[in-house]
Length: 231
Image 1 (tube, rainbow, N blue to C red):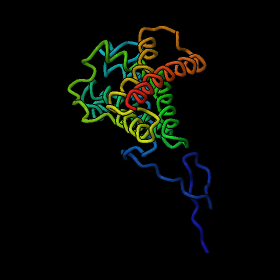
Image 2: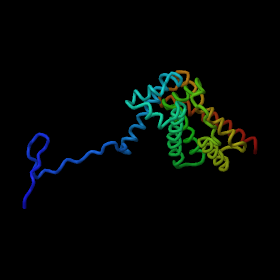
Image 3: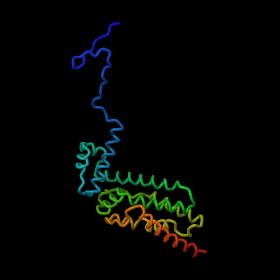
């Protein structure tokens, strides 16, 4: 059987060698490449917003840091506010997933309420969340025309846990949503505000654990007093 001899670009025979695979030209990037670019855009934007603020960050800066064209950014996010809102939405989803994991732990209703409240404190101490909250508080325009949510899923879960504890007589009767908000303020808001102001009073897990224990005990005694008054 005759075989044809092929010569490569260097002039050498390539008889019996497989032909080089052709590379597609002008095709769409792979899903992996698209996902990598998406992550890079969001991480870059998050860093710029956190360090410079919303007003001082431009879409051109994001594109330059990502080595991408400005049109590439605008195809995904029609405005800077849309980019910022995507960051907020993504972070909220991550926090909600972490909190849902806390819901899956065993124990009484009061145990689960305590675990969820402690997980909320940990979530509020996340550097990225602190940074984005700081931007929103100082530059409300960052949210653009974002419509308020009909219900906060995190607070809905916290309220539901309060109701479960009330049903088991671990907490006294009353407005479960009100109690849930008081628990949030007692255990998370003070440390969060300290972080937003650049204070270091609540740095470190041990410090947060100690604060949470004292705040939880104070909340519980107040709620328990309502239970005694109702009997």
